Every structure is written in structure tokens, then in C-alpha cells.
Length: 76
Image (cartoon, rainbow, N blue to C red; front, top):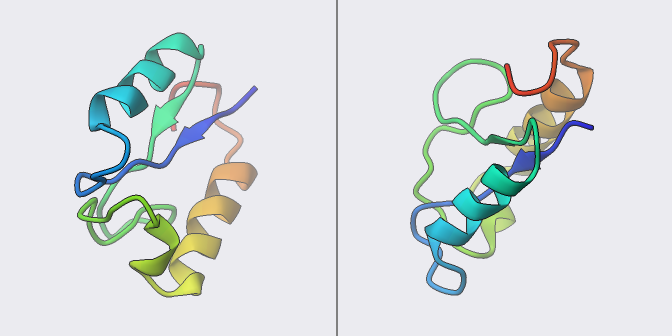
């Protein structure tokens, strides 16, 4: 099962370490990455309401790229 952990550095509701714990406990889970490649966000500087920080097209690209990616678990 593929799991994408979406957790920004500005989240003041749930500490970043909780996102890291989720990733560590779920085999193959990966953190969202920042950058200019498909499936990445421009920056990890977003808070708890992550969907408010970038246009919907950015998030659609992230989700679609992650779902469509045929790489084995953990190599995203």
C-alpha cells in the first residue's frame, strides 16, 4: 500500500515529529517533497490547513502523480 504523508513545517496543531512517526510506522510511507518536479509542492512551508497554501492544481498534481507513480513502495 502506498501512503503519502503530507505535513508542513508550519503546522502549529500537530508537531512535525508526529508526521515522522506516521512515516516510520507505515512500511513504504513517504513524505511529500518540495521542488519543481511533478508531484512536488513549491515549499514545505505550510501549516495544518495545507490545502489553503497552494492552488488546487498543485495539490491535484501531487495526488495524481503519487497515485500514478508505478515505482515500488518507498522509492517515491
